[in-house]
Image (cartoon, rainbow, N blue to C red; front, side, top):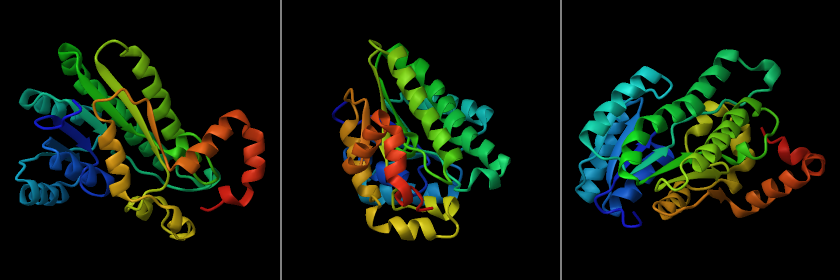
Length: 262
């Protein structure tokens, strides 16, 4: 699977941002993208661009991954149509609030989309991969899954769950021929913050440190077909999360205002 030519890559949250960028990079290497998102209109535009640039006919499906029954139905159609080589669980969102002010409905939707939806999509492709003894599950988590900060307790909880799920699944699938990789990026320059941080203050504070979708996508593409456990971006932020695992009290103390950018 190191050669993506002819391989089917399913991408959730593919209507824009990182998901659309991954679709472009995969298509440029000869992959057959299957694009999933809630907005069918945006998916149609991505499909047109892929056709124009790479003469690739992407399959597109409108789906809210938080709806388990919809996930079953859509993925049943996908797996009847194609053999899924790679699933990239990219769909997700965040809302930044102090927990005391958080809307429990928002928290529930985050967990349902970021965690349960990701699990549902994964469960839907596993039987086919297990039968073939080949495949790659790539879960887009976050550095927030390593270090939680003020105003992101709910979002961080969802990404901690993604990491826990990825680690357990990786061990369950040992010797099956299926790889499981967690991607832990820091802030990415996408429209994620139009929902997560409506005030715009956080995005303004961290603008110079934000990762480009192009950079993150290339790192993800480079891992496909290899037994990569995690990709942590950027390296300096990963160093901080590693230190945090060893000395959490010290890092929280020294982090101070650096953790209060939201």
